[in-house]
Image (cartoon, rainbow, N blue to C red; front, side, top):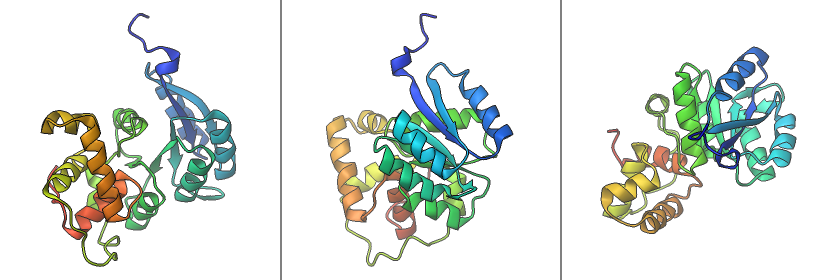
Amino acid sequence: MADEPERSERIRVLIVDDHEMFMEGVVRLLEREPAIEVVGTAATMAESIGRAEALRPAVAVVDFQLPDGLGSDAAVAIRAASAGTAVLILTGSTDELVVVAAVTAGCAGVLTKDKAFTELVEAIGIVAAGEAYVDAHVLAAVRPRLTQRGLAPTLTKREREILQLVARGLTNQAISDELFVSLHTVRNHVQNVLVKLQVHSKLEAVFVARQSGLIDDQR
């Protein structure tokens, strides 16, 4: 097919879930997506680490509840084994402890299992591009648990503006287009925000900024 992405351009995805029927369903649906290639599956945290190291997927879609550990723990181990892999957590719960654990583990996104399959595809594409997937319903479920960082750091007007756009789900390129600045400039501002907020990912930055009142809740 002429308009199907080349194999090398497809997003390499690892699926980690111990519920075989659910995992097989997700794999079959993703295999229909021309931009995605499912390169492997794993049912435990231990298996996921080995698969990530061997397969080097762009994205690991990880269930939060695994037989031998939490998805947040798996995320840390997967990223240690394959530094370029973005981890997207799937969860059946919006409990604040689940979300906070995922965010502080450096996950690129959190998606609840009650969402439509199209949202999973969208989330995979977003985190594969190095962006944060921010689910408004997940954000709304989190109470102030990430605010114990002392006084809110001082962000410039432009940094706040860019962080607000990140919270709306815009990619760096989309922010560049909206603000009429270069992509390089956007990346520099984002990096400065991460340093000032003492966080390791855009997703964590959004959580901290919302809870600290640095940005509002408008999407």
